[in-house]
Image (cartoon, rainbow, N blue to C red; front, side):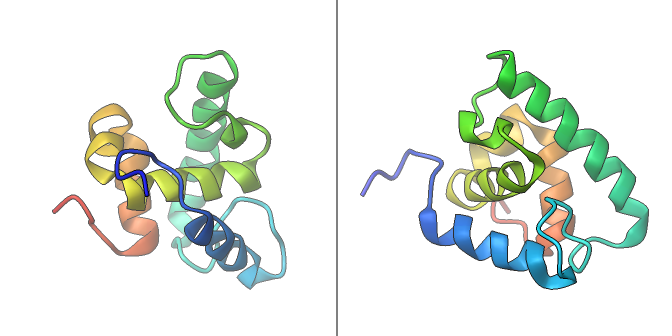
Length: 106
């Protein structure tokens, strides 16, 4: 087991299930985020995906394929390496704290 990676298949697949709670796998966790966070979330994921796809991010490349995979990959990072995510992607970290009502770095 690699304690320093940012990947976790179980978390990844579970987040896909959470994403589908509203009957759509779209990368927008509508059942987890209050409505006022939807537009900021969409803007944030597009900004982060652009960084991934232009090789300006340490988020796993698979997260740049679409919003669904971004949500799952970012969630892996959030739970596996919260310290690093908070340091390198504070806005994303804070949004995931709100989304999951968890603060793993605390």
